Length: 360
Image (cartoon, rainbow, N blue to C red; front, side, top):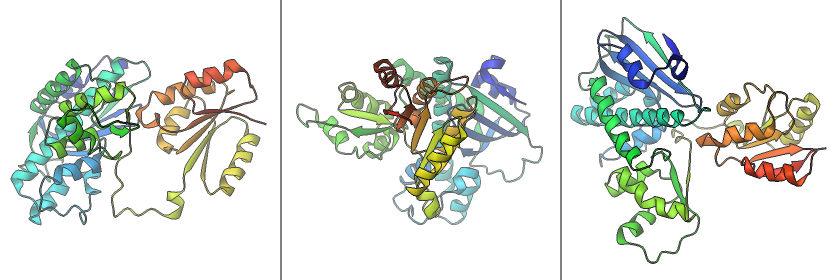
């Protein structure tokens, strides 16, 4: 069973109800923004978790609460595939206790469900956002069950719903706790002791959840402290990628910036390829107007060049769509065109283009 939530008229609660107490298998929830969450289910219980937003960052943060845990030499990639099995290895190696494993597993699942519910809320506010699900029945999923990783789906949903409900009641629905605050310009005067303590921790790398752990407080209090500075432009909130595990070394090819060029003319694409290749960039050309947004999400470029005139959609529309996606809010997008009118330049700025350049 799989489908699009909007097309079916379903919500996350309905999906969970479909996976009733007799279900054995996997539930995968994904979105048009490129996020994906996965859960192993066994008769109304969550017995495992994989993928999600900031998976490595989340588990590093959770495990850092154990002062004796070796964060540096631990392989976190296992959490991307099966958190329960990875936690079991840590329990067997006596790096954490079963009680700790259970507590950490529940905290991780609650974070994931919060993110899912927030994205569901965001999609309800926009026609550009969609969520899908896939239910895979696995009759043999009885194996590899860990008694300390056995959480009621209904209980998790209720607790996460209450957490997000409080978040939304405070008009914070569009602010993810996974966002990273960055100080743009700040005068450290006329601020409270609590504000100063928080501002001194902001380094452009720690998310709202990370900062909250350092301050030993609820993320709700952290974001409410930050927002007044966001409203004055002294702090911006940016979406960031997950942490790369230490054991996943990148090759020279992987460290080169990826530059995407959206252009339907093969001659123009070939010229751009030669220019960017000579500059040492990884070049990706995209020309299918119906798939360009999803393809860009998969490519994760460092820079995007958009041709203004493309069949079916134009560069303005694509740019506007990309700017609605959290991971593309800070990525430079340059519109290329032979038109150099004032109206064209103004419209490019309105849709969020970083720059507007003349093409040959």
